[in-house]
Length: 265
Image (cartoon, rainbow, N blue to C red; front, side):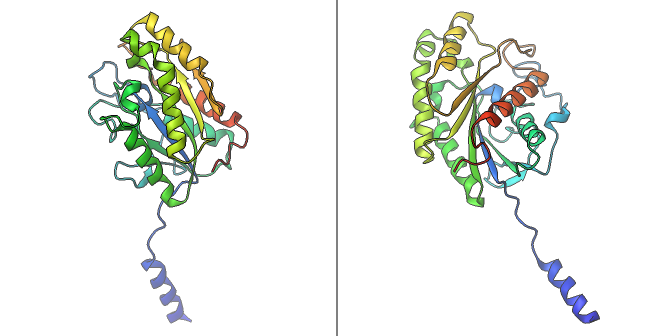
């Protein structure tokens, strides 16, 4: 019996730990406010490394790394993806925490960071030379290899389209085309999309045009949460840490309002 016990212990020691894998996957797309600038007081400043409780690591919240492997998620979520900018706290972690708080049986969440700061909607167009769209689709497909299901795309973008009138005027058409292409290329026509209406912009008049486009887009299985009025960092463009937490919770509550939010694919 003693030898058998030793043999069992030997086998247990030889077994590799189970690979981390989420059941529920969320794509994070857009520009800097999705990538996270909470705690970064100036455009090219340093992150203060203050992580609120709502953004703390949790073994039930994973992120897809730059090399497309699952690891325990931590702020800044986008430091490997939005690598040429200073990243801080974003809405992704607070979103995941809020979903788990509201539904403790939801299962392990996998976040797929894809946002790139300073990007216009044309930079995300399918076939764009930037490669951002291609990277998003590739990372989305890679996230599925461990057996999870994509539950929603969380999208926060548009500040860069408030600089030129043409960009603002064509924003709605371009955004609608982007969402339609993503659903088609992920073979998920009913992919749930939750976007954030702008809190800030470079030109107030053009910001309101973009906001009107975001609030007025007419696609099924799409919701918009409004960040207007939330506190900003010193640059008056990026959400503060507290505002990022609030947006994350707003996104979570919107997601949980979708019918059958526990299963998509």
